[in-house]
Image (cartoon, rainbow, N blue to C red):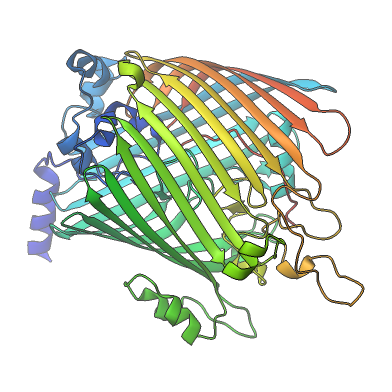
Length: 537
């Protein structure tokens, strides 16, 4: 024990400059490292979060050296020297602060809201192989009108935890932490609590950061031009628990993502996910060790178990054009029968999702200008399951797109980051299907058996088309402008305006304006494009 104590003490005392921790899962924090996406980069950028060591080795901040000097530190140099944020210390930390005032107005009412949050992030490198990190944040918030409806329907603040409180103000919190170990040059093992993201898009139809944090074990293997991720996670179905974690229903997921840089301009990816319930008192199951199989395509294992679980397959193809332009795609299959796809009759079990997008960094040779266009298409009943405890969701939210299923969406973004300034104009419009008494496949928390029952006494199998039979649309337009305060956390002084227009199947449109001003922390990605499509009970 004495020898162990000496070794541990030395590892803590000796500073390490390996930067082998993980960046937060935030586009804002990642922004200065845009060179990792350029032609010639060997990084597998669709697998997020990123390792600091990989990012710094390929792209030490940006190609603009003068901007590097301004971006390395916050606006408080004395704080940086003390906290070790950017000076290479093996222990680094910093605060997480949100302080925003907002005004929300729609056609019938208006009220003042706020978002007040505080927290802390820290990370420690014990050697070039071992590191730990932790971050936590708590918020007290009065949401805009449309978000307040979502929180009341789902009991959850999107991506940030259970919302405790009433219809005016809520308190919610989130914390993440991990222990990372490199047993060899080709392997990394990370045990933690947090989020993961697969894809190059603003959205991901495979696995996104929309839902709440979850415990996970991630095994990453990097050999030659291939990066392979085994992700095992424990998740929760919070329905009926009234916020009591002891009553949450446990579920598990085993995911594999294989990324291959087939050419300096071509990346090919394959994805697989299996979700299963922990069972109940009549059939206690727990974590099924059959899914610890690290080899991709475990569907044969799932078949051998009698096919009781929810399986998804997918992949991506990413093509680089010029020096910093990327065409990215994703395809996801839940169930698929080519004969019924060709018939065009809308078979309910043809569950597919498609994404196509284009992103250009330093567009038109303007440093810091990012342009993005993206289309997402998700068929009815995608991500659902006959046993709703095994749907592709966690903590009352979809694990992929926040709209769940049965919609198509078009996104257009223009963002410019000259020096410390950040300006963004974002727009999206989506066409969604609307449920009636029966399910038309938009609510992933309803079983497939809730379909319309015909005169023959059986559930109707055909006639399910995207954004049908009663389509409505949602449009979001958001403008942001702010001054970056701390690059380590993406914190900035910012003013923002959001226009949200919901056009129902019949009747007049509902128009909402949200104005906000204050200190905004983007250490966690924020997605204001939300829609209350279901009620959790």
